[in-house]
Image 1 (tube, rainbow, N blue to C red):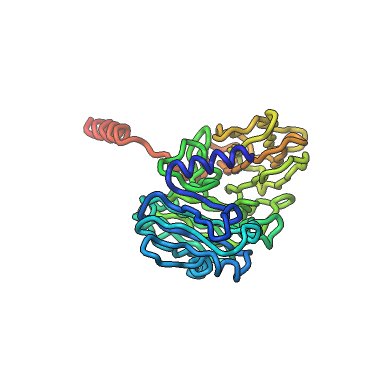
Image 2 (image 1 turned 45 degrees about the vertical axis):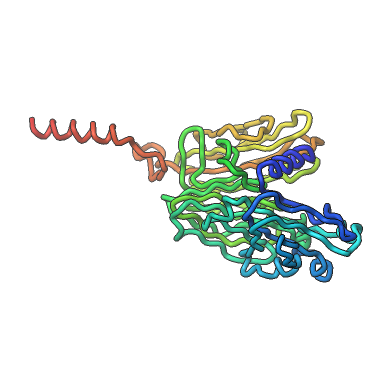
Length: 380
């Protein structure tokens, strides 16, 4: 995981944007170079850091303007961060000792120039509870979330709940910070609509979930995004029951050694109906460790047991089980993400497929052909 994080950091530096840990900065009036491009925005998330320390660390712009990290951080309102705008180069300096800076836990995010120029790019600091809402924004949006809150267990964890989204909109959640190009396909850790091996499916119901020990994650939306409540903390899905017959949820194992613990989710279901279940899993485990995602119903079990990769391979089964179980090979170090779903179909023993609202639509050519056939038939 350390190698993975280093690669992400080096990639970010090479492509402009940076996520800088405050405890890596040098004190004693040494000059820390921040940006090599402009204009850009400087964002500060330092929820658990000492106020007096932040007041004595300064960003100095080319024209001599000095702004403390505390002043930048204090502009955050209802979670939304207001950046310090840098039109040319900027440096960071402090008279404090380097050892004092090593005690900090916050981060600085330097945006890309393209992000600075994008009116639909925003950053949010998860230092307290707030409601996030993009439902009225029809343009494509990009939103970065930062969490440096160390008062949660585990630290820097975020709870997402009360997710609401219109059927025509799309939301894709990714770990880390956004790059200057589109993401590789199937690298999102969560999305609505869900990408399955059989269909792309919108879900009106999303289960409450946690992003554990995650300093940075971001959301891309189009045609209106979601609204949800976000707050510092952890919500365990182990032992819970899903809240709807058709729903999607999320589980992640943050960096660390897996201990063989099995996370179990009970599935709300009506056995008189058919349906589909599935999951998308991605991540990294040492020594080719595997992640098991299984739907169980009595003695029957449908299991996807695979080595996680940086991208997921969609997996689904034509049944809805009684329980969902997620676990990883004991003793392997790493992390992984799982988005799961259950989709109720039609009544068993009938030809009615039930109401399944997908985002897949017939092509214009097929629709035209069908209309032409019907018209000819009516003329005969």
